[in-house]
Length: 71
Image (cartoon, rainbow, N blue to C red; front, side, top):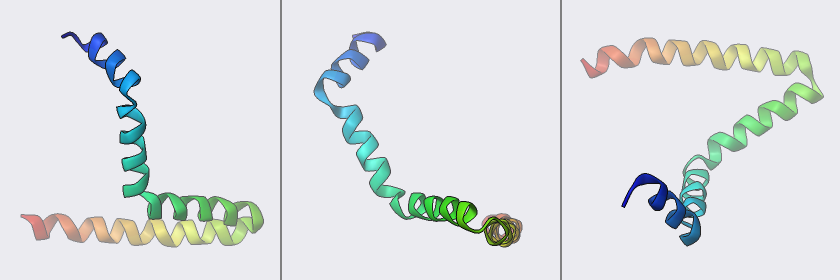
């Protein structure tokens, strides 16, 4: 069976919908926080910008520490 036939069958069987649902379920907290950040940015742009700066700084710090641990 070639790729197009498999894709067509998976669309008919609804497995793509299940896959998207599983991904949404796995990352629901991350997606919720992204939505909250967007709402915060619209409601209070200065506070939203500041919170993104703090989050970005924390992410950079975390990524600078994690790689040496795995070596």
